[in-house]
Picture 1 (cartoon, rainbow, N blue to C red):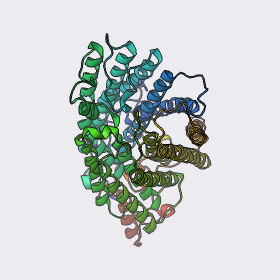
Picture 2 (picture 1 turned 180 degrees about the vertical axis):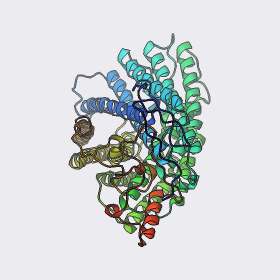
Picture 3 (picture 1 turned 60 degrees about the vertical axis):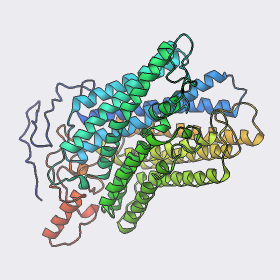
Length: 572
């Protein structure tokens, strides 16, 4: 086995391994704490923990919203319902799902590319704390009052009130700016890390799928987020000074709102699916014990997905009244092509590999089923000409639960179970993971299907009173689905506490799966400097190549199975 790094010299009582190449940065664990850390592993875990906390809070809000729709007699005023709905939807996408994917990328990507460190760690740390500050201000803005409008999911501009905005609206705008800046800084650090710190032999076409998807998503974020910040600046000026930039009477302001502030009019919402595709590809290849059928095709498809997400900027202002968000135009709907082809590559890889079941694969199957449900209902909605009542159709809420948030959330939780041995050195409980999967999948599917059916029935978004018996039954089922989603998140938290915090999970070696990519070439969890030795990269599956070389040197011809292979680097 050829190595590109020498083993570091024995450390003293307070080791300070110096940077040698890309794998061993200066790191001082005796000085740094969780509050001032630049270690990508700690920063990634902080993102993950914060995202899960926001998920629990968002889920509770979702239960309250659903309870009001299912039981209109519940003592909850309509204006408070609107406030809770806006807080729930924005928290689910911005503070939970986006942050969860960010945390997984910050932890895994430097290991996948053989770096073991971030290129600009202080920049990413600043992004983390800016996101947390923005999240706190965001929640506070809804606690102190009612921000104007229904948030960034509102398809039409928020007009400025007479006399200027209240404190809640001002704080809401500031909090969104902080959240956007936090993700922008983190994306810049990740992009620089992938471009600058790859080891010799790892060309861009050999970058693992999750790292490549992170690179594409980071590049799109660097393009899209300044546009969002510009829209927020306009909104803040409009609201504070009573301007007319977003006034309904001002010609041409609808496209400005649509492409700057409205969530479904920007590329950001597509990135949740993009990174999910990359992560799922690596999960599939790992547990299939063979590289992807065509890694270059995966790279091209993920890049195409990112490019198509940018076409949301060229849509006309008529899309603000579209039912099928966010795939409301031919170009944005075309993201289904790389998504579908990537899924076919997963199936082919599993068919030609030697798969061993892991609970993370169940989450990927669930995501595929949700995407299929979304595709079928999109065709049905177009064929049946679903109405778009004033304020929006509840059909769009079904698409959000199924496609926009449901499928990426399933894969994100599956990724936690997949990379748990690397992140914490212990496996999570498979049986509990199956229970979490059932709760999340059934919850998202039931809620999404009921909202789809309500949309076909002509129900407007936010309908509370005047329900028929049919509509009330569907809202009851959707509320049950929401309760299952919350239960699934709570069970996940319990599994993390028991398996990791209480150390009940099975301790693992560095490579419990016989992995193919470089994160499995170091111990679990990795040392402060990332790697003891980084194997030479000669393919998109460097550890498979190393095993094949070792097998041939020993007289074999096959790269072997997990139980037959020698340890690589720090793998156990």
